[in-house]
Length: 293
Ligand code: UTP
Image (cartoon, rainbow, N blue to C red; front, side, top):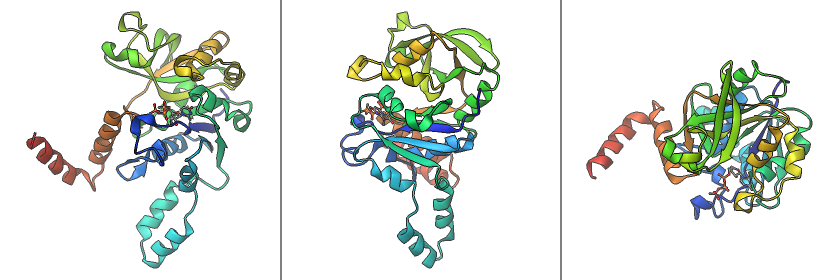
């Protein structure tokens, strides 16, 4: 596979499951401990070697663009007050000059449509797609594991991160069928959106990280609106599967669906418990809260 240089971050959704918090603030800016969701996912991509970060934004999302810019007034004040650690933190989080691009999805017509909106910025090369509301807690992140696995696959392979869920829960997700293994990955035989447990080909669900070939764009362009009236990425992937192989990778690490309230709250607790500066006090608080129940 050609080296993977670019990643798409779709951030144009309405975030209705988090209303009213997301009425004026993007869901992707909700903080897990003290960093916005989008920062974790951009860091995961940077760690995996991605050089260009493409955000598909919508109305009310300009704060995401500001987040990835310098804030001179704040920096000046911090510097005058001698807050070196805070300044270092801000500069650590910032992608390099010229490495971010922002394009608009004018109407939130679905994930497939959001990806298609980035076609001119991607051009004719494979790309990563990371959903910012899925966090994967692992020292290397999920995308780096996928890139490792992709090295052992054909040049035109598409790779999807998958994880196990209890069989009774499959009906909320996209589920894959499992074929022969190849290196760390396995061939995906089918993809089924939200199957009944009895019809599910496995209990492995599609989890918010993809490596896709640029041929997906032509298929997305022709896509009709599918489930929920949205242009679905899975429909285009199913068509692409006629001409290109798809592989699944069972990644290491724990994922959190921060688009749901429970996933978001769990992520906050898990990420705080992983921090030496917060964990001891949080354990005490959790014990106290649970003791009251
Ligand atoms: P979700 O379905 O989780 O996000 O899409 P949503 O639609 O904003 O959330 P709810 O269901 O209304 O609460 C996954 C990612 O795809 C983006 C979202 O911003 C989110 O990061 N997305 C979704 C778009 O960019 N455009 C869309 O039309 C839909």
